[in-house]
Length: 128
Image (cartoon, rainbow, N blue to C red):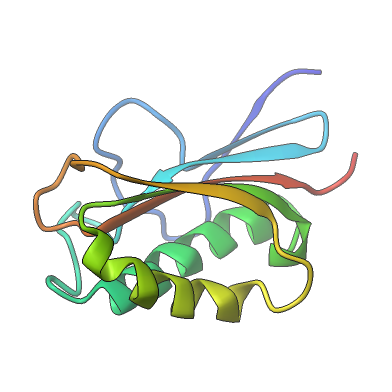
């Protein structure tokens, strides 16, 4: 099945040549998402919880544009810059996945924007 790029209404610029999401055969792949405004500036600098909420709202927008919901998320890849932010990220994350939790991993690493504290990439199965 051909791939379809997913651009939610009001999407801003991307940092590189990629789509915010891509869908093929009922599976939505959401690109690694940072807390960036429409001009690619980091928002909520220094606040991991607010950045996580912003990121998850962006992810939710991609999935909903593809016809799904956050309940369709099956896998998340989480990247954080400091383990000191792990609890804050998890507290916000739990609000977005109150039922059965998707599989995931979390690693500490550097991110493409120095002010970014968290990045999340997502896979969701929204059907055919």
